[in-house]
Image (cartoon, rainbow, N blue to C red; front, top):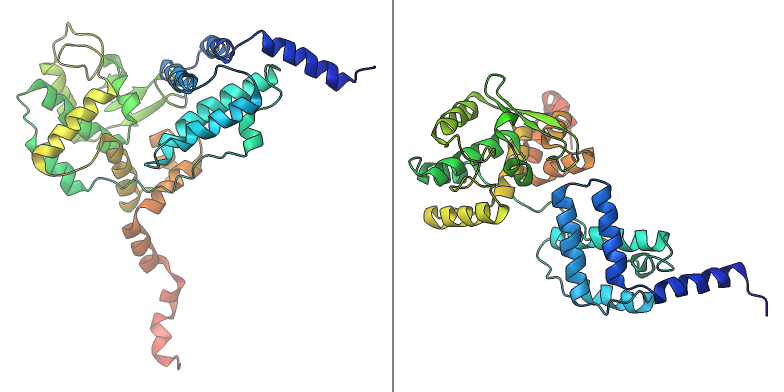
Amino acid sequence: TVLTNCEVQSMRMKMVCDDRTLREVANEFLALKKAQKVRERTLSDYKKYIDKFLEQSENSLDVDVLKVEILEYFADIPKTSPARFNHPYQYLHALFSWAAKQDYIPYNPFEKLQLKKVRDEGNVQPAEIKEIQTLLKALDKHNYTELRDYNIVLLMLDTGIRTSELMAIKNEDYNPETQSILIRPDVAKTSRSRTLYLSAMTNTSLKKFLKVKPKEWENWLFPTRDGKKLQANVLGRNFRKYCDRTGVKFTPYQIRHSFATFYLENGGDLFTLQRQMGHTDLQMTKRYTEISDKLLVESHQNYSPIGLLQDSSRRVKV
């Protein structure tokens, strides 16, 4: 019997797969990402979601088994937010796409299943200015942690900076003379540097904060009270405490939405907002125009062509 090229390739692939486990392939993939110098946070996310999938997996490269495991894995994710579904989707899809290109599996099971990301309808609401003011007034500026978080809120509202970027800012990234903060390529989510410019209020507050912060601490602009790098879970826990104290309710992420929404409502344009927020795609920025119903109503009232008929409307007979 003469085997076709496809059958030979299939046999070779099966031999390779028989000698490997999903864990071994995943480890090779993670080593590749590390060699590609992806951001530390991105590498950590790859590992987190791959490890979580492997916990409920048979550690097999059999695509029929993988398809069932993928469906079970994503079926168990609570329907709380698109990100909770889309983050593991992104990293696991990348793993299996690479494995297919390496002939470790015959195809990416995500493609055969036609499993898609959950559409993000942009339903995260911005924190209201009055809520932010209430929280800021409640913070004790004689307490280091609360003084730090006071400045963090100001910076987020002033620039729309991402939480992950904020926690990675070093002292030398802040320039009080030019009233700016540099987001380095190794810090930026997009791996592209950008400069954020500060209002006078934020700049003045940051300069006062730096005078309080011990100089011998590690080189982070917003360290913990032990001088170490601030972590997202710690900041989130602090926010929940402040919200319980004041009766308001919002997250650090909502402040980023507040910046974008009110920036547009105050007359800012999408193109400068895109650069400020570090979006590579204008479509991401456009989501913020969908958040503010107030902006839509005001824009319609100001710019609808029906206004051109108003002067002669009394002469129009219906």
